[in-house]
Length: 147
Image 1 (cartoon, rainbow, N blue to C red):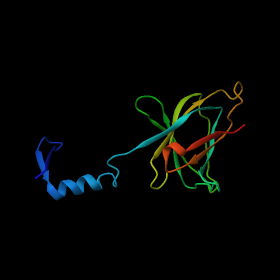
Image 2: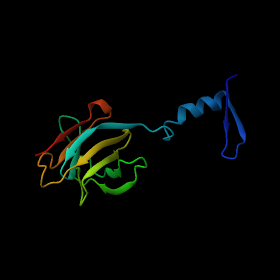
Image 3: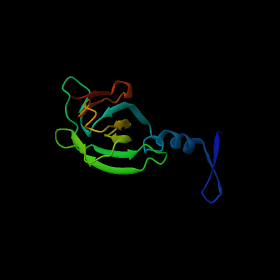
């Protein structure tokens, strides 16, 4: 019989075996015990405004997606949160220049992370906005910079 031993937060040893162990290993990913982060790429922009659409021929907008702006430091502190509108558009106002993480999750897709470097808008004209084309396959997710 196969068994696994775990320790509780108080140091007590628990034995799980057989069918219970198999069920635990099968169900754990469904309830978020393992969380994948899909890092898309790094972009440089003058402002944090963008649009999230489905990566398909139709490019349907994704509405009500929660987009988190996090510091790129070791603690990844949450700075601000916005939600996409009916057109899939989001915008963070008054973001200082620096390096940040934009994180978002939709339905059964993994958690996505876009590394963003913001620049002074007076000296940097490329990338005023961007479009994120989400795909359930992390490798097929695309980011297109605007003018």
